Length: 143
Image 1 (spheres, rainbow, N blue to C red):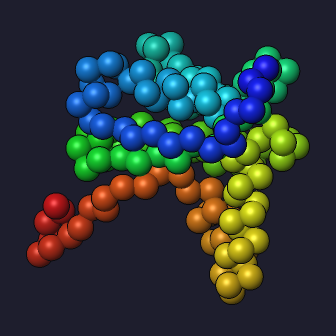
Image 2: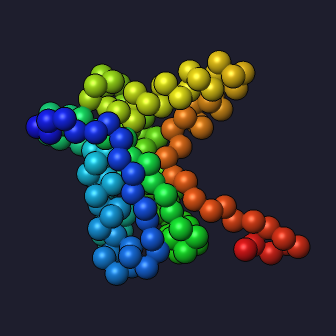
Image 3: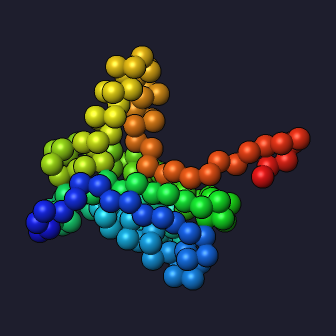
C-alpha cells in the first residue's frame, strides 16, 4: 500500500525516448492508472483491461500526459490506447478514494456543466488526459 501518495502525477512522452526504451513510459502509465495490456496472438497491443483493485493494492492514480509532436505523429495507435485506457478507468464503478481519475473527471465534468456545456460533451472533455501540440492543416497539408 502506498502511504501519502499523490492523487495526480504528470509525465512527458517523447517519441525518441519511447522508441529507445520500447515503451517503458507507456508501461509506467498503465501501471499508475491500474490497467494491463491486452495482446493479440501475435503479441500486438490491442487494448487494455483494468487490474482489479484488490490485485492492484492501491488507488488508481490520475496521470496528466504531455506529448511532443514526434510522439503524436509516430505513435497514433499508442495515443488511442492511452486515451481509451484513461476513459475506461474514468468509467469504472469504484470509490473516489480508490480511483482518482474517476474522482477528478467527475469534478471537472460538474464544473463544465455549470458553465453550460452539455453532459456528454462535458464527460468527454473531463476525461481528457493527453495534452500537446495539435496537427494543423494549411492548404490541404498537415503540419
